[in-house]
Image (cartoon, rainbow, N blue to C red; front, side):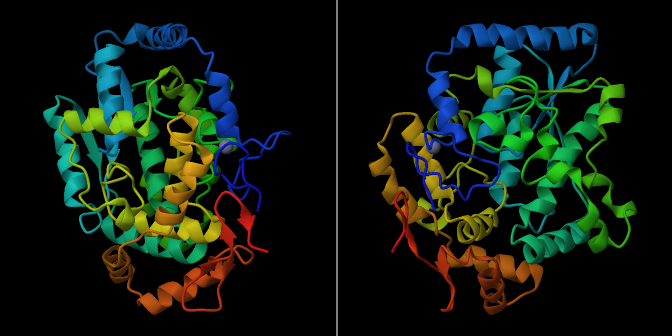
Length: 378
Ligand SMILES: [Zn+2]
């Protein structure tokens, strides 16, 4: 286990190779952005957007923004409308009723109150649950099911409604180091489908679970050919945002009516209570990620603050220590109830997926064998 020399990212992160100096892609990106002229970047983005919306003057919407209702999507929607002067249609692929939290529903309603046309897609609840359960057992990552619906629903609507511009926030290749998504420029989101989670849009395991692919239309990422024919272009906004950050987005979204999650980071791993708050089992998924890769939300929050210069690498270590394994028992219990397993079955399965070197799995639940920021304990 080797850590990035600047932050607390370990080399266990998929698709994120360190450079020759032992620095992770996200830190390398940050150091390159120090000299970025953001005003020039903003003009560059404006030119791309203008060109793409030129022939779309009369239409009610000239772009689509995929939203969950959380802090980032709230800020993004406001920015696209008020700063770029666009007319966005917000598209949300919501979780089924038993899965969506009250806070999630309130935050979607908040976007509507802020004046946005918001289209909410709802994949069939029973299949959604079957897929969540299967993704847990196959990958120890239940989000693989629902993220496919989120990322596929947005381009599907773009094609259907003939809205040729999709705007996403962060560029995952540059900002979090998911290099599979790298496009032809910092703005280019055409390869988003190659992210670690979406795996090129491959639905083979979905088909096994569903028994047929007829039920899978909400999960089908449109082909390159159909996107090309409809002239749909996917653009990242992130590179033009000088002050895009967890604290900034949180405070701005709260000022615009976002409801945050009252539980603190010791229960959720989420420092500000504003990240991925449309449902609660993300906390369970983050715990699973921790056992597979040796880092999770505490580390990621620390990394962001380290890169922003708010804290030192050393000061970030307690975030990893205290919050990476955070998951209040009620989240775990309700997740197990939803997919119909006992907690003992949950832990037995988690131990099969836990990283065999980083964790000791001889006890009831995995116990780490490493120190964040340092590596394996000899
Ligand atoms: Zn780093």
